[in-house]
Structure formats: structure tokens, C-alpha cells
Amino acid sequence: MNNTVAGTQGYGADADALAGQYESVTFEEVHGGLLHLYPTSPVRALDLGAGTGRDAAALARLGHTVTAAEPTPELRLRGQRLHPEPALTWLDDALPDVPVLTERGERFGLVLLTAVWMHLDPAERARGMRAVAALLAPGGILAMTIRSGPVPPGRRMFDVPEAETVALAQAAGMRVAHLGGRVDLHGRPGVRWSELVFTRP
Image (cartoon, rainbow, N blue to C red; front, side, top):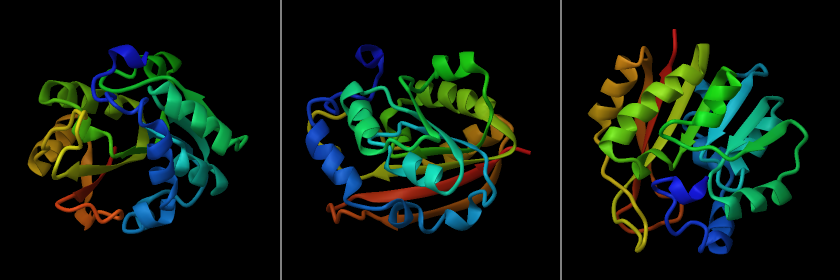
């Protein structure tokens, strides 16, 4: 699938370096400001754009039944080796249309979109939000972290206005639970992260 997925350019070739970078910080460090909003009892959880599965594996260890969707095969294979948790299932799927997940028909109590959304252009973001909303169970939570700042060479990234993301989520039937942000954990100059959490009634 990765040959047709916009936004994955450069990730396969840089998989070794990226895997080291992803695994050098913890789930708790990345999501610390949002953890109080995540389900405390076990749910079906989806890590969409899971990379090496750091976050998906952490959710599995917390007792959730987790699906990790990652379109870049080099990252997905590394994740399967690094994180063999039995409650973690890997899929080759991607935004904006998530055809595999849509076909499976599962609904999730928690969906993570960590460092994914800025790879989509405006039209893809509109399609993607509708697709993600359809994957949420009633009462489900969508947690997004979105990068802003300089774009690394060879990557496809866009500036994503917070107001646009909120409007798309609300148009898809979701409510705002949290808007915030944090600095870059790797200390890259000019890079910041927006944190947005939405719920489906």
C-alpha cells in the first residue's frame, strides 16, 4: 500500500534512524499532558500511523486491545519485532480513506493520530476526518498531535491551522475535549506540537 500513500515519502529509506528516534522517548513523555483524558478501563484502541508501535504497545500493556495501522513496511516490520505484545494487531492501512479498517467494521474507544495529520493536504484532511470519525465508537476519544515548524528535507508536510482541525472534527460530529500544545521532545529548532482531543457523543 505504501507506494500510493501520500505523506510517507522518505520514511522507508530512513527507517533505521526514525525507529531509534521514535523509541528514544516514551509513550508517557509524548502523551503526558493528555493521559488523563484517555480511557482507564480496557477498550479497543487504534494507533493510526503507528510507526514502530511505541504507543500501540504501551496501550496494550495498559490492558487495551490495540490495532496498529502503519503503511510504511520498513517501520511496520520493525515494530512487529520490537513490540510482540499479544494484544497488538498490525495492519497495512493509512489515511485519508483507511480502506482496510473501514472494511473490517471495528469501532474504537480510543484513536491516536500522533505526528500524522500534517502529512495530509487540505482535501485529504477533510476526507480523513470523516473516515476517522466513522471508526470511533460512541463515547470514543480521538487524540491528535500535529507538528508545525521546519519541514525535513524529502518529507511532505503542511501547516495545519488549529481552527481547521476543530471545524472538521465538529462537522464530523465530534466535540472538543482539549486544545493545547507542547515543545518538541527532541529539541529541534522551531518545531512545536499542537495537541487536540475530541470525543464522539
